[in-house]
Image (cartoon, rainbow, N blue to C red; front, side):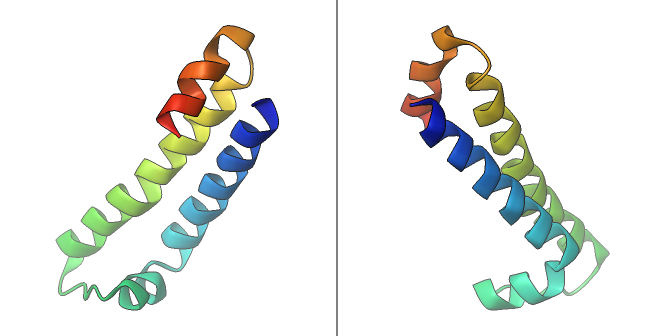
Length: 75
């Protein structure tokens, strides 16, 4: 379970960085068009921030054995 959660943490971190630093390209790939700055900030918060938060959560779950099962359940 620990390896599975670590893989999830790494993948979510990679996707968070990718969506943050290549926001326009990844948004277009998903079919989104950012028409103004508020649309771009919403995309960064939802796709960059949420994925970064999930990466941190999955990493945190690997730090203590009692958090492994809740982490897998969320995944």
